[in-house]
Length: 186
Image: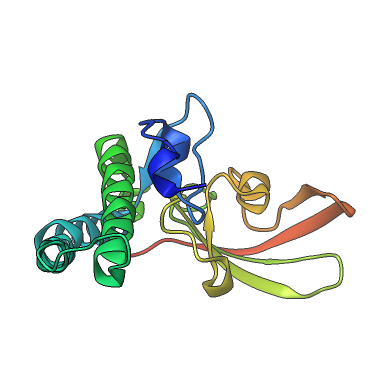
């Protein structure tokens, strides 16, 4: 079927803007984020709007001026890239609008696990892990930065050093021993 007869989805739904790498927020929750995470998202948005998008628009404009657009790779790829950039910009705008910046250094209860805490814990097998609890948009599990809505973070929240918490996983129940809690200095 010719592409001209296929209607693209122009929904402005949240799901459309999320993209494959984005994690949806649970209904009724706030988008907690650290200052560094907020600044990183803001910088990405600024880069897209001020640098990348204008460059792609220029390429598409040049490609369109070359005539036949149906087989013009620069034009077709450029239009696709513009849609991707616009989708990401809508996503970033929505996430930045609802972001609630939290400074973990100002946490008064430093002996308990809350957003922004760095926690060292061990599992039943005795293997130790070090994780920092951050916002959903700044989570990098392979680098020890887990989202505050992740199962491990939810199990650890409000625990004290020396506590044993229960983590429910698809493989069964695991017990985590909280060994150390720390926060960044003010």
